[in-house]
Length: 430
Ligand code: PLP
Image 1 (tube, helix red, strand yellow):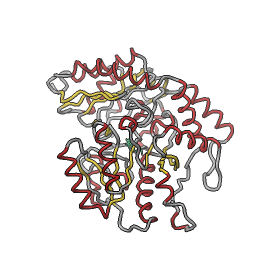
Image 2 (image 1 turned 180 degrees about the vertical axis):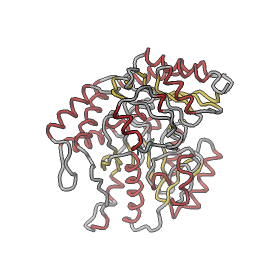
Image 3 (image 1 turned 45 degrees about the horizontal axis):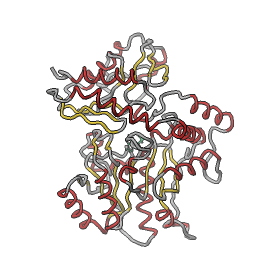
């Protein structure tokens, strides 16, 4: 780690004693800037050990949609903690998991109604891919083990999930040779790309299990947006080529794009959907791969070999399911989607001054996602540090500065965030 931990003024003892024993995410440990010591969170704010408070523009990797420490979620977790934090899901079932499965089935589009729980988004994607491959095996169709996936796509960091991500996303480049290869194509935004995709589908038809896509917004790949038409095209192509359509709504699910699920904006449903991140309102790890009856029915048999052989140890953790149920209560009781619409307008207005700045390539907003794409960010960690100096926590991805705040953020806090982005985008590389 960069030996400039002196920048962290007087770190607490737990920090000084422990920091050299952790391996940080997505980091070259030799050069990474030391992480900021955090002692608390509240609403849209992160409290640092030295007493500073940062307004959070990221909502902890897009999870904390109701703000941090929402009392309703906290109380649900506390109640569940007293009763039963966890019990294995093999041979045992509990109220929170079954209630959550029923509620997810009720709000998901189409007949996505069989919920397979896991503990992280990447694992939910692995489960979805496994379901799709075995769907074909169970139906007696051999060789359908590949997926069409898309440039700009990101689906997680486990092997199968990496393999369906865009290989050009820097994160996983070095590992490409170790992964199964899948056709990766441009999203069919226009006729030309639709024809190219059509050709790929014809060419690989006998080897394909399905199509995997992040609907409406490709997040980690650079906050890239595409119109709902693209999803309708994918649905039509999946039907024509008899492929399973998998929507990875791990980022877009639970209101982030303006509707509860992004696919609602296209008026279509996938055959399998993956969920995580905001599922527990950013409090505890939980994920799900949810299948339609058609997919589930391919596993329904007297033959044990046709079972889905998967079962994470902490599957359907009771605390996490209680948190997710409480999060769904909040979506029902509080005007979250109206808040997303208001954030959308404020982001549009607040980021508008970035348009036309010399280093700015694009400014775009979708739901509660605001993006200022730069032509280049010469020194990413310096930029991150300057945001902190301005009292906000914003972590650009590559050349993309983005805001994905809690839906409960106040208008003033949001303005502080957009003002900081406008200020730092101006003359960024001077
Ligand atoms: N899928 C998408 C669309 C994501 O954005 C992410 C994480 O950013 C994942 C999958 C992986 O989720 P996790 O980090 O929980 O494994």
